Length: 342
Image (cartoon, rainbow, N blue to C red; front, side, top):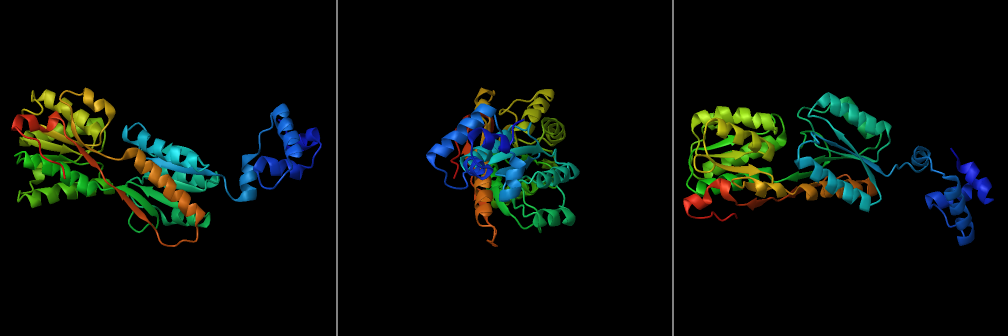
C-alpha cells in the first residue's frame, strides 16, 4: 500500500507539501496541489486516519449507541443524527446495546479507544459506573443523552416530552367517554417509561378518575411483551388502552384476537409513535407521533456544538414536542365525534 513518502516522491514535492494538500492544513500553490492530487490518484493513496487524528486530536467521528436498532423507532433517529453529522463533516459509528449495561460499557470503552470525538447514546436502564465516567472525562469525550436521562450524570440532553405526549393521548380517550383506560408501560427502569406513566396518571387525575393499579401492566417496548401484557390487561375489561410504543401495539392486537375482541368496538387503542405504514393497519391506529429524525439530528448538532466550545460548563436540555394523529382505533367515529388534540 503506498504511503505519504511514495506520493511525495512521485509528485516531486516534500512530505510536508503532501500533508498540507491532503489535510487542507496550509496553502499550497495550484500547480503543486495539482501534482500532489495526480500522484494520489495514480498511486491510490489512502491517508492514515489514525495518524491524522493523533496529530489533530480530532477523528471527525462520533459514536452512537441505541438500545435496539431493530426497533423501528431507532433507524429514523439514527438517520437524523447521521445526516446532521455528515453535514458538519463528521462520520457516525453505530452500536446497539440491547439495553444491556455491560454491553453498553464495552461499546463506550471501544469508542474511546477508537478516538471518537463524542458520543450520543440512549442509556440502558441502570447506573453508569464511576470508573467509566472517569474514563470518558479523562479522554475528553463529551456525551449527549438521547431520549433517556441518567440521574447524576452531567451531560447535554435531547429528549421527547413523554409526559405531555401520554397525557394528550389518554386525555383524548377520556374526552371520547372511555373510563376504564388501561396502560401498557415500557421497559422498567427507563426514564421514558417513568415519564409516560406520569402522563397517564396525570391525565386520570385531571379527569377525576381513580387510578386502578390493575389497569397498569408492564411491557418492555417489544412485540412479545405487548402480547403478554395484553393477555393480562384484557382480564380487567378495559374499554380503552394507551400503549407506550408501536411494537407493543402489534402484540396487543394479537392478544385482542385471541380474546375474540375487536378494536375499537370492544377496546379502543392509542399508541405512542407513528410510522408511514400504519395507514395500512385495520383499523388505522391513532398515535402520538414522536419526532424521531428531529431527535437524532438535534442530538448530533448539540454534540457538535459542544465539541466547538469544550470549555462551556453549562449543560443544555432540548425537549421536542409530539403530535397527535387521530385515526380509527380510538373509536372516535363510533362515538360520533372527534376529540380535538390541543
